[in-house]
Length: 414
Image (cartoon, rainbow, N blue to C red; front, side):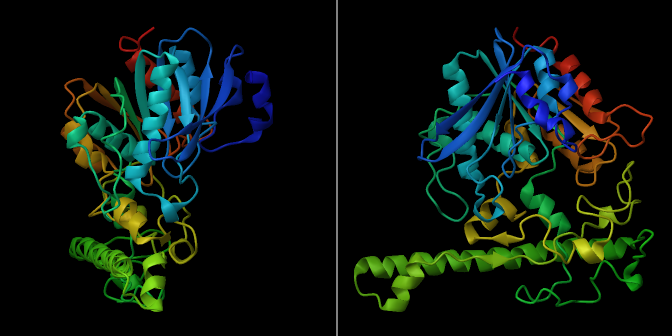
């Protein structure tokens, strides 16, 4: 494929590329890879020819085939690899240890393809995934994780795990689990009843500081609220562990040969559960908390009575395995902040000033925790996906691309 084949994508917006910025000599190829544990994943390689370095873009939940940074990175002089995970579009099955194996399949392919420099560009949730990959790749094989938080064996020790050379984080939220914990509505009193409520913790009542024009939460309420969010995660963690233990015990009994029919069925049953009301991060409604250029509302909308109660949002339907590995802010290991000290590679971070899910205090912590001696952070005006804040200013996506190219200038292998 060449750049002419991408014309049907010209009308796409949001996090998609600007078709006009694709180079005329662009060629693309599609590759299906097999991971060390036998899963298949698909990637797209964009190149102009002769590149020695490749930049990788990947998100654990989405396929970013036309990501806006592709033309920006091509202009920097790198080839670009955009890959999906085995669980793309399926929060239900997303386990980050397995997604790390998906990253490994891509970096191994690129190394074998002949690229001398492998660079990771983690945007949004791709930041947590690439941070976890970098941490594991920097370890000796026998020091890597051997099991998921739910106990599933994982073959990280058997994977090549090519060490990345450079890392770029663009609007990296702290990790899917921490993002969700910050967004959970802690006034839910019964996980099986989506309209159960503790009115003293409900974030969208006038009594607690909310108005449709903007909330003002008392610091004591904020403290109680955040503590209650953590407690809710702890309760769901316990439920998820109980589900896993129930199945494992049933399998053990069935294997021994003395199980009744119910036990045999339990041994094969995959639990699935809902997580109600997941759009309630106080910072989206009270703009005085860690203030930025952001407007009132979350990534999902500006009416929390709709977005907190409807089917959109993160981690709405989970297995116990996906919850513990990805959606729990307490057990998931795919956290940029947790992995940051192990990242010694030169690292560049971009923060968008009107981001509705990545906030300055969190990014300051991440940058401070990075183990890299060569690290920098730049703020760019834009929303979470880099859209401009007004019609008369440049796209944050293009400004971010320019900042990345400037940082790569003396570091990219050409």
